[in-house]
Length: 283
Ligand SMILES: O=C(O)C(=O)Cc1ccccc1
View 1 (cartoon, rainbow, N blue to C red):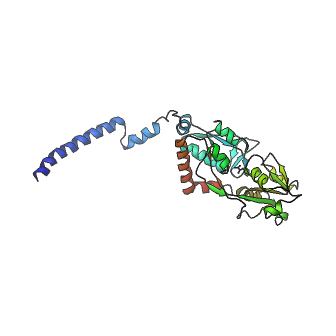
View 2: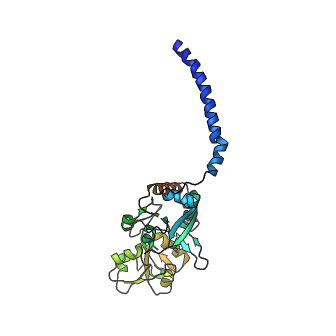
View 3: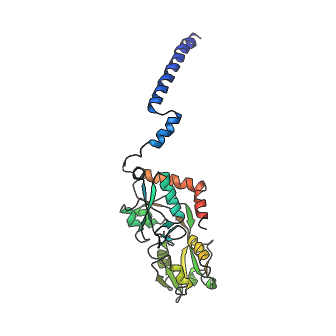
């Protein structure tokens, strides 16, 4: 009892003293509730510290390498030079979350990895498939979507190109865009068909419509999107693609803080409905 009483008096006194001291310190440091928010807004972004996370916040720029030729993920309007697409919206969202603006750096499927590893951009975005070749040179974020290769052809021919064996025949003209997974897939699996390399992925589907090529094997997401744009074309079994692939964002090696941040951001945006909302707008 006496112990408790003796302890009680100093405790009460100590509590008063501690409360006063903490309140004074908090006011001086500007960390009371209202001042805390103001301080949060006013706090200058951190100086570059070797991680892109701080560099992007400090500079206010997120440099995004994107090909601009792969709808619905990334599209560059040749007349205005402006970018649009699901991953363009995602890039702006990521940049915004860091208090920065997305700046788009044009690249190609063949140059994407080199542009990123040479530091010409902070992140690669735009329907990029996860491949082990890329994963050896750079880092992939958490994936945000699954996909896989499926044929797209003139609807009149849609029963002719359902299997790889039926596509890989002498006389069948398979058109591919160079430098990415479509070309890699075609070269690995087609030995009898004629492979036509067409540089501009934005006009490649017109070649099939015009009858200058017969079939393209591309990601199901693109095939479905293109079939909607070109009514003469049909995506063939997009629900049963030849391959399994994942789409993710490409990051430089050796920056754990930035990778962690992008992973958290992908995780949140794919679970809170944001990614779905952006994707729906491009259906
Ligand atoms: O290389 C990749 O990551 C791709 O998925 C390339 C690509 C580009 C355009 C259409 C389909 C796939």
